[in-house]
Length: 82
Image (tube, rainbow, N blue to C red; front, side, top):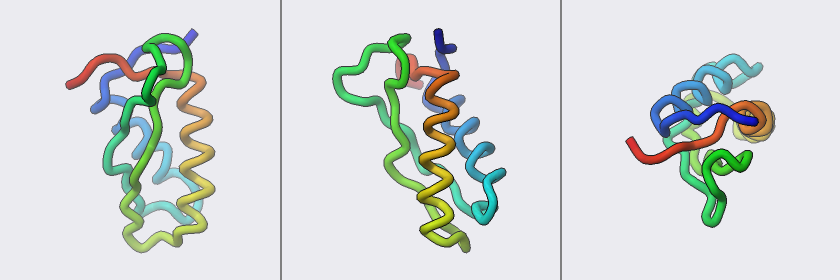
């Protein structure tokens, strides 16, 4: 079972998790979006479509986004709009 979070709350969590990954201190999650056809509360129903790199290398950020999305997707689901 996952915990429901708003888009703003999930974005904040994803940013904190991303910036804690090695080489991603300047990266920033721009926004999250709901996955089409995925119901709230039914597991991972959101994705991270865009990340601002800052001074981070794209390879570091790619790896980190996958890790962060997998980890947070097991804990939280997106509910409603802000």
